[in-house]
Structures are given as C-alpha cells and as structure tokens.
Length: 188
Image (cartoon, rainbow, N blue to C red; front, side, top):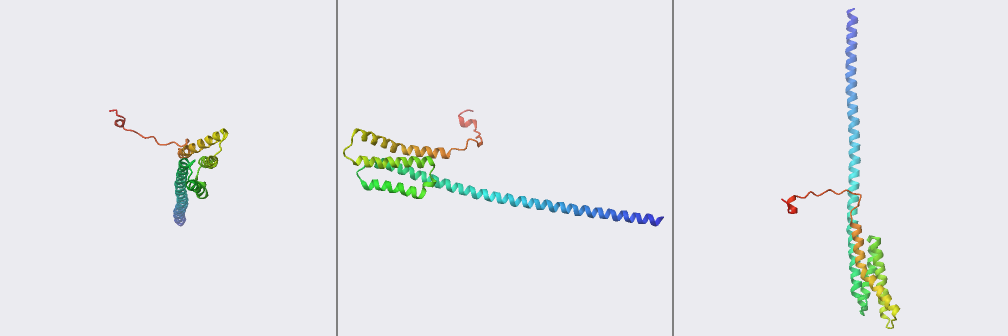
C-alpha cells in the first residue's frame, strides 16, 4: 500500500508540474499576443499620424498658395481701377496680361467667388475700355459705361469678401475659450 501512495503522490506531483508548465506557457502566449496587438496598434497609430501630418502640411501649403493667388487677384483688380479709361494702351495691355497670367497659372487656387468676381471685373474692364475708345457715345452707352465702371470698382471688395468667407472657422468646431484676467478688463 505504501507503493500505491508513493505512486499517487508522484503522479500528483507530475500533474502539478504539468499544470505549472501549462500556466507559464499560457501566460507567455497571452503576453506574446498582447505584445503583438500592441505593436500592430502602435504601427497603425504611427501610420495614421504620419498621414495626417502630411495632409496638414499639404493643406497649409495650399492655403498659402490660395492666399497668394487671392492677393494677386486683388492687386489686378486695383490695377484695373487705376487704369480704366486710360489712353495709355501699354498700361491697359499690362493689366490684361497680368489677368491672363493669373488665370493661366493660378486660377485653380482662387475660390469660386473670387474667380467669378475677377472674371466679371475683367469683362467690364475690357468692355469699358472698348466703349470708351468710341468717341460717339449716346446716352445708352454712357449708362453701360457707368455699369461697367461700377462692376470694376466693386471687384476688390468682392475678392476680399471671398477671402473672408474662406478663412472663417467652421461653425461646427468648438474653439477653446480664452480665460481673461480681471485686471485686463480694468476691474480689480
């Protein structure tokens, strides 16, 4: 009977050792699975972060180009006002050339409103100069010339409004509140 007890004790000891070994392997397996998932998550996070940083840089570069194009369109609209009705054909040609250069190279950077305003202003500029070169102006043509001049004169303001509407923050975005010191308001 003692042998049976020894054999049972040895079997119990072997069973305990197997259970401990299985527990260690299971813990290592769980640890490895966790490390693998953590590494996958880290790689996905870093890839998404890189993508967003690249996208933000692209948006900033585009915004910079858009503002430059709008500034150039604004300058052309001021040149149209300055040279409208001028007898100096070189000055008028220079304004027309700068308009066409802008549209050839940067029209896609202009907002639709700014592009539309500059187009309308340029058409009026061209029509005004054409009508003004006619020396026989009747009252109907005089009214047309005035309409064209008003369109030209309104172009810079329309371009500024287009830029303002482009740079307004999204109404759905909650901006952080600025906490002001009471001493800044003159209160103590």
